[in-house]
Image (cartoon, rainbow, N blue to C red; front, side, top):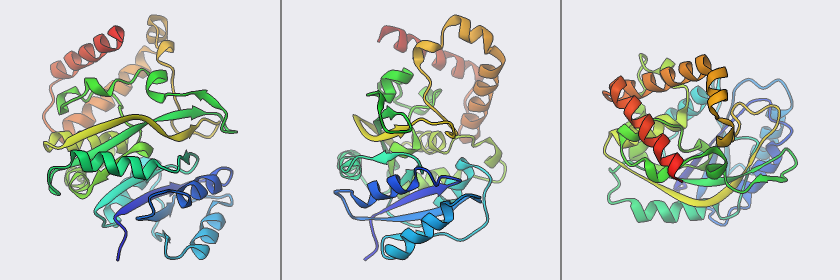
Length: 281
């Protein structure tokens, strides 16, 4: 019988931390899953590490063989297109999952799902650690000023709320995301995790969150995306980084508008509402 959860792991030059991540998956209390790995053209020892684990655990791990995609988001989305399963999780190569991560996520997803055809996503908090797994902050949400309770519908989705590595979602959410993932829209998908949640909301689905950290989110020099402290985003920071933040918001808005109609005025109002929620907290 096939596994319920397809865990999608993308790799790229991750030889330093990959073994710890793979071992944390193999230590999960919930064992009803299968791991799929696709490498994006690594030039270090990553592919050798992956091959050794596939050889040792052939019933648990599958290596997908197709060309590199040129970036994490496109790589994850390509895997989502390639793999059929009832449930999905994304996995980064350099984190470490708590042993009950899958178990907690599955339980919470089951509490939200009304029907199999209802797009449903759950995500969790995570602990920020350094390269040696020493704790830097116990809560990614607190550190980054993330307030999941303030986002309850598509037109609230003006921030990157959930890290892909913390998500569990069903096939209906996958179908909603892939339906909007057209040739025209592919260049606009700068963040696969945001795309999944926003498509879920736009399709009338459910999104739930768990305040419990379920993984160690490793910060190191090779991170594609790292944690940014909310208290660093001061008025001076905004002034000094105005054009960079403007470009980011334009890309974010264009991505949202590719999923469903979202006016600039709606976007600005939603940003203001979220900012007010952050200031009240």
